[in-house]
Image 1 (spheres, rainbow, N blue to C red):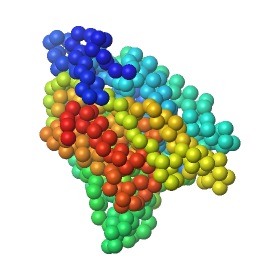
Image 2 (image 1 turned 180 degrees about the horizontal axis):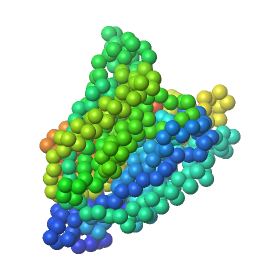
Image 3 (image 1 turned 30 degrees about the vertical axis):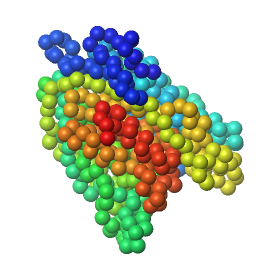
Image 4 (image 1 turned 90 degrees about the vertical axis):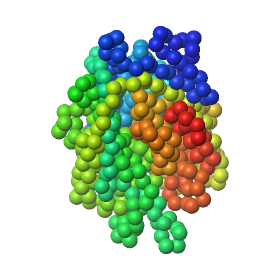
Length: 460
C-alpha cells in the first residue's frame, strides 16, 4: 500500500520513481506550529517459561526481559513507526502481521512501519505459518505457541497506542559516531591457504581468535531527536551478531541489552539499539564464552555509545522523507535448498530440531515467492536510516554509506527474516558459514543494492 498522488494532503508531496515511492514533509517551522513529534514505547515480549528459543532449547530462566522498543513519528499529518524487538528473528507472514498490528495501533498503514530484530540468540525465532506446518508434521514445540504470539501482539499494540498520548515536538536532530574497541570482527577470516576459518560468536580456539578483525564497520552511529537541548530519544546502530553464548535456556538481550539499559538508567533518555548488517560479523575474536568476556564486551559497547553521544553534532530538523521499495528475491533451488527438499527435512525423523525449525521457515519463504518484501527508509535532512531484511552481510552497509558519503547513513538489518542470510555473490564462491544459511540466490546482491539505492534516493 503506497501514498499515491490522489490521496495526498496539503504539505505532502508523493512521488513515484521506478519501483520506489516516497513522501516528503517540508522542513519544520516552530513559528508555523508544524514541528514533527515523537513518542516512545516499550513492552515486554518475553515468552512464558517452557517456550522454545532459537536452538530449540526451552526457556527456563529470564535473565533479562526481552523488550520491544520503538518510536512513533508524527509529521505532516502522517505517522511512521520504527521498532526494535529483542527477538532473534521475525519471519515471513508473521513479520507482515506485526507490521499490520502496529500500524493499526498507531493509526497509520503497514508500509510506514519498520520492525527490526536485535537478533540475540537467547531469544525465539518466530514464524507462525512455519509453526503451523510443524504442528501438522507432529512437531508442535519449535516456534512460539499461537496464544503466546497473540498475547505479545496485543501487548505491543497496547504499548504503541498508549504512546500516542505522549507525543513531544522535536526541532533538532543529532548525529554522532565513534569507533568501538574490541567488539566486532569478521566471522570469515582466511588462513594461510586461503580457506575461511569460521569464527563463531563464541570462539575458544586461540589460533582462530588471533586472526585480524577483518572487514567490519568499526563505527557505532547514534541519532538523537531533541527539543532544544533536551534529548528525547537516541537510536544506536552497530553491526555485529549481538550474542556471547546461548543454548542454555535463558532469555536475554545479552551484551547489547546490558549496554542499552545501563545507558538508559544512567542518562535518563530513552535508548533503542539496532543491529546493522552483521550477518558475517561476530564477537568471537574477543569472546571465549565466559561471563567476564560478556561484561567486558558490554562495557566496550557502552563506551562506544557514550563516545558517539559525546561526538554528536546538531542540525535543525530538515525535510522528512519516508521511502518504500518492493524487494523481490529469487529463492534458492540448488541441491539442499529447494522447496521439496525443505519439506522433506521437516518430516524426516533424523532432522535435528533447529534444522527442522528453519526448514519450515524456508518452506514458507518459498510459498511467499509471489509477495515482495516491502522495505522502507527514513530520511530527515542529511540523515538516512535504511531498513533491510534477513541477515545482510557487512558489504551492504558499506555500500549504502558509499552511495552518499557526505550524508549520515545508518543501516538496520534483521527485518523480515524469511530470506535468511543475504550475501554478496563472492561469498557463495568463497564458502564459509553464511551461504549455507541463505535462502536466496547469489544474484540477490544486485537486487538488494538496487533497493538500497532507491531507498537512499540515489543511483549507482
